[in-house]
Image (cartoon, rainbow, N blue to C red):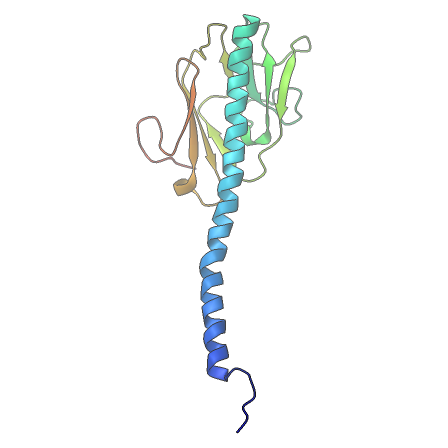
Length: 176
């Protein structure tokens, strides 16, 4: 007796169940991978801005500041969130909170954060020519996953940033 090649209904159901289970497990993992990559990119942009400000302050023997900016040209009014974008500029008049005036050089503008928010304990940040920020600061990068996936950029008194998954006192990060 000659048999035709093919699959039985139970075999097909079994294969579809295996494929569905594999996709059900893998899709959330790929989504989280994409969110992790986006958060890492944004954190790296911010750390780059900090290193740029710190090195330019030393090189120029002056104050270089960062502030939130919606237009990439001027500091946004107080209370503007950092995820709206930020600028790095030479702060010739050393004002605190830092405000970019017409005669102050814009060194770099960073666009708004594509997804999520940035919580900060400082409205602006300035670096002095001896490499210090003069104050400690913490910036928390959050996305829709909440506290568990947040990352902090913690700036020491000497102006050195570090990335952490806990705050400076080793407590869990809070996105609210």
